[in-house]
Amino acid sequence: CIHVCKFYNISVEEFKSPKRDKHLFRARVDFTHIILNYVQRYNGNQIAKFMNRDHTTILHQKRHKPFAAETIFIQNNAS
Image (cartoon, rainbow, N blue to C red; front, side):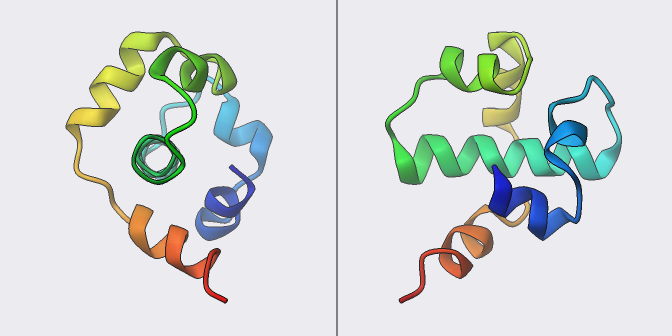
């Protein structure tokens, strides 16, 4: 979450807030894709709970193409 927040220049509080601004939506979509596709240790319900969202939000976000998930993941896992 911290890496996604740094990439989008937002705070964790903003990330978890009920706001629906475009940049927050993009950050949440990328976070969801990173967790589901790269980390693979958490399910949609766990991700939703972490983000203070309903599990249906995760289902909706999964349908969206990630905006920068791969870039964020690679930047933070490069050796």
